Image 1: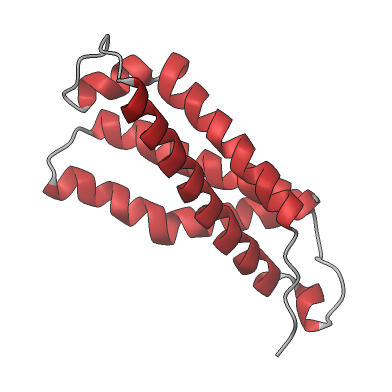
Image 2 (image 1 turned 180 degrees about the horizontal axis):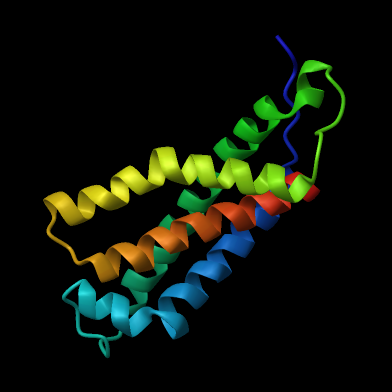
Length: 145
């Protein structure tokens, strides 16, 4: 069994990057549309405590995602198994890892929200594109560091 090396600096940077990406995605870019599709008042401001709890939970979730994703990337890296460096571009390695992780784990959950919670396809689009892009950002950081 190979020893998997994890770059905690890269994980930390991925956590911060995906946190800020989530802020941009769900605030200026799609915040009002997302709130409307969720049945919330788009102009309502959460209390300080609610906002702090949400931010802490988001950072924890981003950490778990980046930490597990770093393990997955390492396992699929041929160098981990003594087979030499990744063949082809690092971008395609990161893209493929992001795409297949999204396809197998995020997309089914996002579809369930439409099927069982009766949320809109618009909300599905906002959330599922965010999930894919957040994975891609994390993968690029993890692969290039």
